[in-house]
Length: 69
Image (cartoon, rainbow, N blue to C red):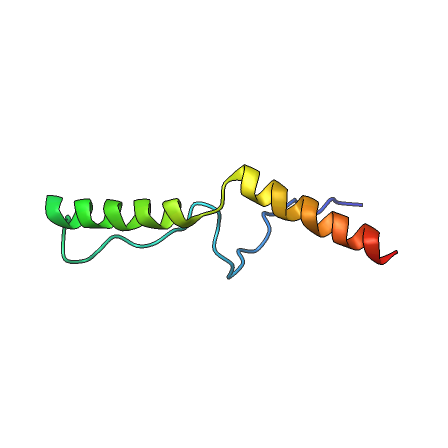
């Protein structure tokens, strides 16, 4: 009985892990634009909770759950 050759799986419509935002069609960003974007990102990072804050909230939540039992 002849064997059927193996074929590669069909491509899917889902994006791969290397797919990301496409570069701007207007060309490279200016230094001022990049500086503003970096500043905006730093402000967002500063608003994120720290590990200690997250641990404190989680601990308080666990304590509250124990009290309800």
